[in-house]
Length: 295
Image (cartoon, rainbow, N blue to C red; front, top):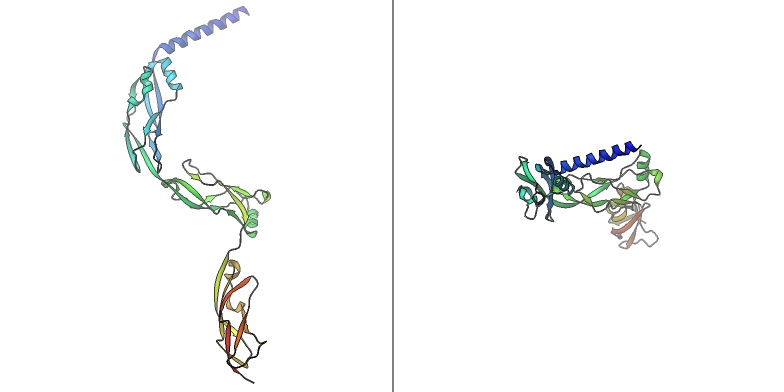
């Protein structure tokens, strides 16, 4: 047992000496220094940076190389004076100050002498939300119960190149079996440069759309013995779009008020009988004149 511990101590001592020799020895190492940015303009955003790394071979003592790698240094580019489109920035290796501070030198550089940054315009636009469904049963339930997502549109912001072709934002699938869930999450953008002003939408019953419509030349009914002028009426009505979109003049009844004395040249009110769900806003005329009464 004593010999075992002696062997362990000897091994650790040898390993320590070997590491010290390695750290003190001048070495070469291939490294990749990431390219980073500062001072990006508010209205512009870097869409691509080529190359994204500086490929270098550095030389120096192993200890200094190890410390440099641990610091995770980057090569920074100032975007203060950049413009839309391609910007060409020459590589200045002297800005890698930490190399000189650690007595490290560059013995090989990548062939690239400049970095190309493509700057895109930041824009925003309203995009409709498209609900999706786990199955047909959920979709049919959603439609038949007049459900809708609110807001119907969300604000999308990002580089013009990335968002110009976005025409809708899909939700995670709606499931009828989880009706207690009154919100839907939106599928997040695939690119982190794109953001939404909302990432969830509410599920609410859709309010019926009320519209107005004009119906012309509805014949006014009267007894055959009575001649009136004019003999038709036009009306303006309002109601739910689904009711009014298919309604026809023959769905209305217009007749004169026969409860009053019908004398020649007298004015008689025109009464309009409406289908269910329809409201009368105005009518022309409201009265007609009796032209002739056959006794």
